[in-house]
Image 1 (cartoon, rainbow, N blue to C red):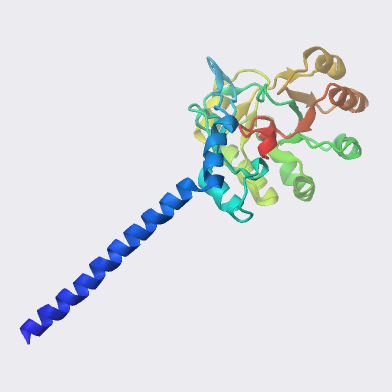
Image 2 (image 1 turned 90 degrees about the vertical axis):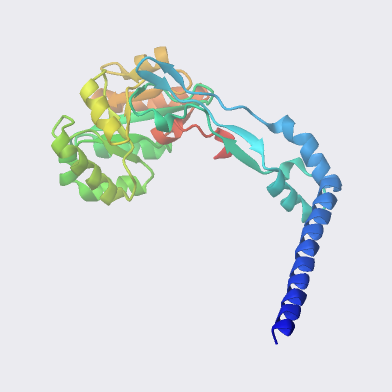
Length: 292
């Protein structure tokens, strides 16, 4: 009986070994065929032409300007897609992003002062701590088909929850402006939680016109970036924008009668200069515009 068992075992083992070798050689044969496939060869030959190196963030002491992702051809996915038509087409190349070695997401302890200067984008920022002029502002932005980022005070949010939710659903970015005019440890997370509950999105940014280590430290500990705008328009919005506009500008406005009066002209001027107006999230994103 024992001898029969060993013979049967040896037989099964032999079959298993043969199957393993069969699979091995089949995989090798497939690999050789793929390597010699004209479509694969052309993809490999052309791939380097489309590779773009990432650009690291620019860091100036405690200030930062985000970098830009690179890209490289995903040879395997490109091959799988092109084999469906059995011919090479550059339009069917599939790309993977290559992140910078100093990505923005790891630099919470620095003031973000600008979006990437390689992209023709700017961001309009409005500080909201009461309802004055808000409906007029939204009407202007809607008529001009412009999205913007609203930094909102926690007290205002408590009193206007439906409006905040509506603005978010309309595409506006809602961020934390503190509570009762200041960022404080005891109210910071409460304001974040309200925004997240109303918008179904995480809060990502704090705001300051001037360097403030307390704000920077609080936001950094909560994995949020501190935005220090490229242009704080103050009492002369149009003039400030005209004198200082550049790629990646983060443009901050006080919500005043003057701002509302000049905003349509400001938007027209920005468009005439060839800039797209996007939220802060898009302006400082390290993704390339063509990859969105």
